[in-house]
Amino acid sequence: MKTLTSFVIIIFLQSLLVHIFCLHQTSSNGILEYSSSTFPSDFLFGTASSAYQYEGAFSTDGKSLNNWDVFTHENPGKILDENNGDIAVDQYHRFREDIQLMTFLGVNSYRFSISWSRVLPRGKLGGINYSGIKYYNILINSLISRGIKPFVTLNHMDYPQELENRFQSWLNPEMQNEFGYLADICFKHFGNRVKYWTTLNEPNQQVILAYITGRFPPSRCSSPYGNCSRGNSEIEPFIAAHNMILAHAKAVNIYKTKYQREQKGSIGIVVQTSWFEPISDSIADKDAAERAQSFYSNWILDPVIYGKYPKEMVNILGTALPQFSSNQVKSLNNSKVDFIGINHYTSYFIQDCLTSSCNAGYGAFKAEGFALKLDRKGNVSIGELTDVDWQHIDPEGFHKMLNYLTDRYPNIPMFITENGFGDLQKPETTDKELLHDTKRIQYISGYLEALQVAMRDGANVKGYFVWSLLDNFEWLDGYKLRFGLFHVDYTTLKRTPKESASWYKNFIEEHVNRRELVDN
Ligand SMILES: *[C@@H]1O[C@H](CO)[C@@H](O)[C@H](O)[C@H]1NC(C)=O
Ligand SMILES: *[C@@H]1O[C@H](CO)[C@@H](O)[C@H](O)[C@H]1NC(C)=O
Ligand SMILES: *[C@@H]1O[C@H](CO)[C@@H](O)[C@H](O)[C@H]1NC(C)=O
Ligand SMILES: *[C@@H]1O[C@H](CO)[C@@H](O)[C@H](O)[C@H]1NC(C)=O
Image (tube, rainbow, N blue to C red):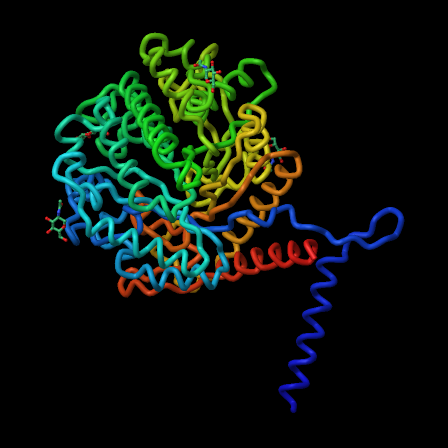
């Protein structure tokens, strides 16, 4: 009886809360209105991941070594905790448990990537490995059976090492054919169930790290951009990106001509974006901020959408920038994306280094557009600074970024394919502190608020994925930089929800509920 009474009281309180949430807006004529959610009913709320950072099982079931396996094994000193993705969070064996975590969150989509070396251990040579195909089939089916739509990246930084050894991977146009082959096999085997495809994850950021600063494999660069034993930071990044753009176009072409009519999915590409705020009102700094965008996300999106490189790149790079032949322009034009995927984490101030001299620093040189990236102007920072040197909390920058993309690429739907907050684990950091992640909640709620403002301004955004479901292998930061809504204990691989997991669950629930009330 007592339980029944409290049950009734709880129900009463709950409905009161629903009313407070939904009836808080009063129009000018005094009539109460439902405050509707900005998010349409088909909006995807999800979490994001990638194969190398999550799967582990690095040599299981016929998987070959990829560029990251080899790089981390050969250069442990380059990884903050001298670790690697051999085990990562072992999602290869624990995906069922992870899908339960997604069910707890109430997400309706999961972004993951295909491990190239699991499916095609030697690329086009040597055939398909059906153990790899089987793994992704089971993962996809398990997600769908829980109402979670697979959102699949064909390639997220990792490729069979053999392709590097044989022909230098992305520096060689042959990589376009290799990628087209991978794409075709994935559409063929998974496309009857996967309705959201992206080709490459962040080609812009991958190329900068691999061929300008040389900090990612294949560790190619030249001075003053980095310290590598081979490479040319003012030539190679533009060749690699050119091959990536054409590889993307090839995959989209294959999808559009062979699969899309029957499979009825959509396909896009994912770029990394940052908001670049001119450090002063001078024309030179404003131009520099525009150059910074052109040497970053526009570098990829302009060719994909308009078939040509941004004019700022053409002006500065001259003949170092490859040209699209008329056939390639046609191929780009015939492979229009259905959407673009936007990864976004941070903002910078930008200072011109073309017409005045700059201190050396990230962005200051030719291959980066002579646009120095700074986190502060005098003693004013671009947003709240964090322990992570590149992460500055600036939701308004996200709002500006989405408006910028909407202006530059009108009518193309967007998915926010990554956004999240990293905790850098210091020796004194306790698990309790990591679980009590108020900064992450503050960050994500600020960025989701900015997203809604941008959508009301007209940004055509169809989904939002938090990076990341779990703490995972964060490239050069190893396991020390934690982005998860769920904490991972790396000795037991136990997953524990952080406070942000409950926060995200409630956010999704509230928006879905508001939507249903409005729909009724
Ligand atoms: C696929 O993996 C299995 C191990 O599961 C291995 O025996 C087989 O040789 C591999 N096949 C190819 C084509 O790589
Ligand atoms: C560059 O790398 C080499 C070899 O790894 C190392 O010996 C040297 O100290 C590095 N130089 C700088 C300036 O970091
Ligand atoms: C791009 O394709 C459209 C048809 O979809 C065509 O009208 C246009 O001329 C093409 N542009 C180029 C540069 O090939
Ligand atoms: C920034 O510097 C100015 C002048 O040096 C000073 O007046 C101001 O209080 C400083 N602001 C902050 C937030 O430290």
